[in-house]
Amino acid sequence: MVVSWSISTRPDAELVNTMLDAAIASVQGGQARPVVHSDRGAHYRWPGWLTRIADAKLVRSMSRKGYSPDNAACEGFFGRLKTEWFYARDWRATTIEQFTQALDAYIRWYNEQRIKMSLGARSPVEYRRALGIAA
Image 1 (cartoon, rainbow, N blue to C red):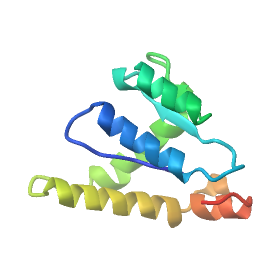
Image 2 (image 1 turned 135 degrees about the vertical axis):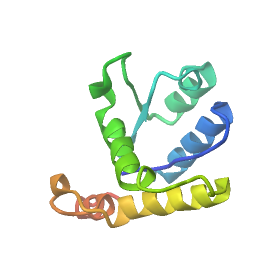
Image 3 (image 1 turned 60 degrees about the vertical axis):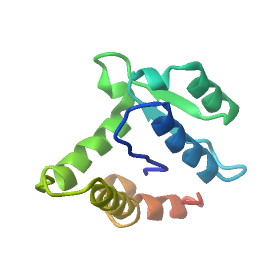
């Protein structure tokens, strides 16, 4: 399940902090802490990011160089997103606002409606609810 996401025209600390702050805010008291998957980008290794992760008691998952299985859940999601949503469209006439809205709609559909056989033919939200975990 995608817990939070952010988008920007610049890959900087503000981009990743926005996403992380939203993820932290979505975790309810007593609930297991989510895993934060990332690549090896510099903004995921700077002290401010590491402090935010530690203070929120989140689990950090950074793939090792050239070893994507460390980050398989995240890599799998991005592969599905590109195959199911991104590659199927011509984006040339799309504004950033339209792109962001379409991406948000895809992520909501992915979380709430797209079934996965590995989750018992349920969506991620349905699966979490079945386990008694708030979605």
